[in-house]
Length: 116
Image (cartoon, rainbow, N blue to C red; front, top):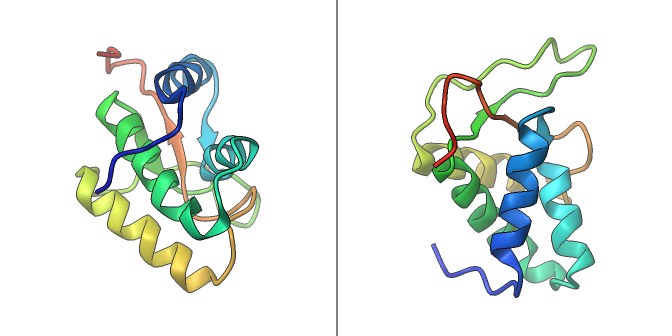
C-alpha cells in the first residue's frame, strides 16, 4: 500500500484513537476527514485504506454497521489487516460510490486491547 501523504496524518490517527475510546468509528468519518483535507476523489479510496491500515495497526477492530436492519455491531471474523483492507476495497468498488454513514465497515477499540 502506498504512503499516506496527508500532512497531519499522525494527528488524525490520534484523534480517531481518542474517539474510539468512547464510540465506534465509521468508514464515512475517515472519508470525511480526507475530504476536508481536499484529497482528490480519484485518490480518496487509496488514502482512506491507508488510514484504515494505520488504525488497525493501533488496535482498532473492523465490524459490521450498527444500524437497525443491519443488526448490531459485530466484529468481522478475519481481522488480519490485509483481509480487512481487501474486503473494504471490494465492497467499496461494488458500492459504486463513495461510502456514506451506514456503509461497509465500522471500527471499535476493544477495551481489552491497549493502544500501542
